[in-house]
Image (cartoon, rainbow, N blue to C red):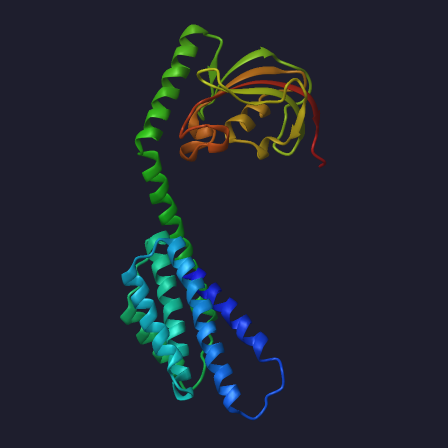
Length: 294
């Protein structure tokens, strides 16, 4: 319905543009002009609504429902203004409730909401809601967190994510069987040391100049610095890459085998054509290290 509101706003601009001149006493000509304005205004705005309705793919039943609401509002007199404002506010509340249900799994009890709303709105004095607001914010944050956890679990259990995780595990197992110099950390990151490098170990906030190439397990290249160094900190990249950097020193060369949960996880990285839970392989060389200021 947002687009319909915008269309109505366009109509309002058209109407305001016709009301900028001085008001004169009504004549027969004015009456005829008023009729023409009324007809054209209805036709223009109605066409705008129809265009937006068609763009959204709404059906005719929704169109008739919308028309009944508009008809009620435009025919109301000034004594009904507060009632119509209440309807408008109620629509916004309902939209919020629907959002809570869809995005956060919070099913707002309409009766409970209205009971408390009425009591607060009609009270003799306005109470301090700072504590209630803080509690509400806390509860909503928890609900949002639970919703995100449920969504993440659903993504993790999706067939493509499960397949990506199993394929990655099988690939790393095969690499380690073929090359016993490949090691694995407690987090699950596997790596092969080509050369150790020298100097102090890299920390999270050090600025590191890195030459690298990233591939999928089938050899498809998704990122390549092409022999040029790029600067970033270990805490600015995916967890597995950052962990690998912190094991390295200036001049070091490693191959990192990063499982999906230490890379882009269940969401993948569509623009780079990295699927859910896909394992990544990076050839990494630390060209230089600019230590963080202490």
